[in-house]
Length: 163
Image 1 (tube, rainbow, N blue to C red):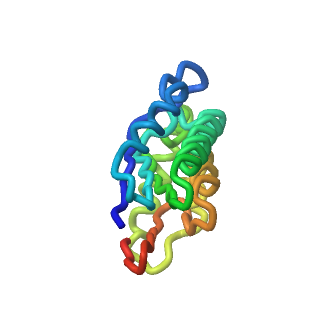
Image 2: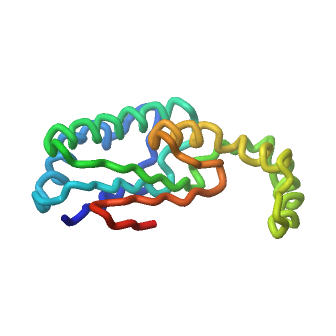
């Protein structure tokens, strides 16, 4: 059976004034109107999920995608919905006061990127900027192996594997 890839990009969820959040039913109807034989929906969320990378923005985004998934599942019983997310530059909280520190940390970690093991303390400091995104990502895709840097996602469908 065919699969459908549903792509959201640059949705920039803010604390207020999010038109996307009010059109979930219309989006579900549009997605549901495609080929009725589709029983796997891969929802790709690429870059700039949040506007400023704050935790409340991700809570709203998570609620939106959970509602999206539940409503689609109700219209397509027996189908599977898989979420895949990739962060963008807005998915980091980068206060201006920490810009010099961040640049210094990046310069420090770059040489270790060629080694088998990176400096865990440097990486932990760098990844703090994406902590709200990382929480969102892990809640969106349960059982994820996301480590804040990369992840390989394998989606099996009817005996076929795609990575």
